[in-house]
Image (cartoon, rainbow over all chains, first blue to last red; front, side):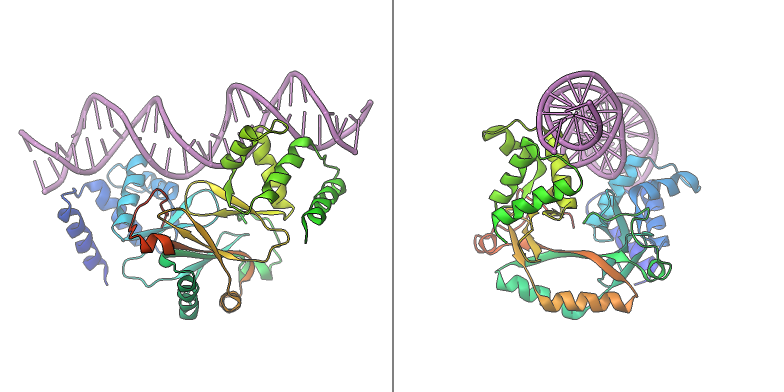
Length: 158
Length: 158
DNA sequence: TTTAATGCAAACAATTTGCATTGTG
DNA sequence: CACAATGCAAATTGTTTGCATTAAA
């Protein structure tokens, strides 16, 4: 799905529930889909403050992020620290994450077999999966190579 | 490993780093290993207030929980809400969790094949795993049966 | 006695919310 | 012009911390 189609979806989404397409929402939407990085609410707010465009308050950043997540345009992910990070997902396929505890780098991975096995595990318990989180924490290739052993700036919870 | 052996380990752990075995630590330790439930720091503090024994403050609950986690006696787990829950792990095998979004129930599951596949996925990216989180959110058997569809008291993040 | 641990209350940090004001549909 | 959205600042919430006091070792 291309950018334009996604914007149309967003407009339709708002219209359907009589929500308004404000300059703030438009700007946030554009910025979120303009990056391929994973970003925190604070980082997005920083972009709003430093780049040019209509003024956006921190509260609106949070409110709009919520809206995007509810609408399925964006997903939030808990990378183990104390703040959530977001990524746009509409038009992308499902994946899980590996987070480097030394440099903070986030890699994506995907394995159909794992997805199947987890459904099987759930079925055994009579459990119906709505969503899942599968996150690996450790050292990325670069940090392993450079012997950046433990405890970098980005630490993991567990 | 039986209870007594674990307590010995805890005592040794403290001794090795010249930490003190206070009545508070002893009480918290006992309580943590006396339950098979998953509990939050607040719940543990509640136990400390309502059950009899030496007085324990909230700060000490948090500090001791930290100590137990660092020592590998206990693990914290993020079940998607805003507070962490804990479980004692020493003497138990590794497992992951399924959390019911309707009633809050936590089930444990384990699949060696998944663990292997995740190591393989990591290797492909040159990533060395230190730890992982694999959590399924959805409806448990009981809630499915009773048609307790969506949005119970316990909600999930994603 | 030395040095760590406790309790208390104040401090924190990410996120949420109340409310008066503004602006889209 | 009605009602949703914004900005602001105050409120929330789980957790952490500074510090004077207490108590293990």
